[in-house]
Length: 388
Image 1 (cartoon, rainbow, N blue to C red):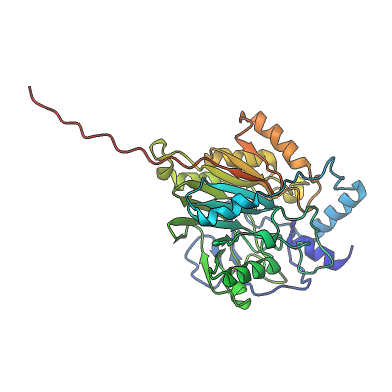
Image 2: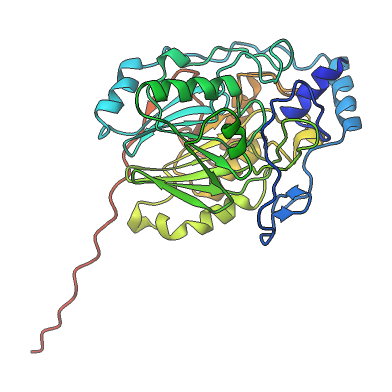
């Protein structure tokens, strides 16, 4: 096996001691306050698990086993695609009172238009999830919405710094287009990642620790714990934070899990925001974006990537009204076929008593319109007792 390719696998599907394969540097050591439990002298750690990524020897074992078994097998059919609804996507900027909408671009890249903002998660438009253009996981489907058709983005959310979630060319292009349009995009990133942007000359960046929040134009972005890890090169493992986002817009409460293994973090997130999600205030998250791919073999990936059964449990833990599966069908990062995650999701959802519409997948490029969150119920009128 080529050493460089091993290094790329370590940065995407999993692994342990990171191999320096054309490192795209700029990450920052976690040198801030160590008063929080997930801050340690060695870097950041998960709430409910230690190191979730495997060692180099285990990586080699996995690669040998998958090669011997001829994995991943070719999909039965390509990942479904749909021509993007460009007129409606573009119209949101001129009429932000429109109903919320989401567009799946592919992998963990989703365009969410709600609360008067256009938000993009983990933008990844490159052909390879790799620091090197000639090796590493190659895109199997083009982005559902090309960069040239992307509307002006207000906010970009970054969940962590792995190459399939933080892509240098994509970030530079988005920042450049926003600057040219006179509307600089705001990047919201995990603790330690801001310096990576500074090295690119991008300064409109907010860096968050777990449970920190940032309010931008009336929309609240909360950075929440998940179970994962970070690295972009040799010696920087877990030196920057990872997480998900709970976002509260007036017309849509939504959650983006990024990349994660299963843990109690999702029940904690639900409990954290329980007062906002009472029935009188409109109920739970209107939408959750949950990863469902890159999960086989379980002995290697279980701690860092959920499978569809666990994804359904996350949906339940969060108390989401509806969820959409992401992080599948775009890059071959693990042993299951590209089209296996939706099949396993359908089985898991049925087994756990979900309705068909509760947890679905989208075609790459598909835009889905969502009902606006209903306004909180007014308090009951004061009762006046009149003496007889």
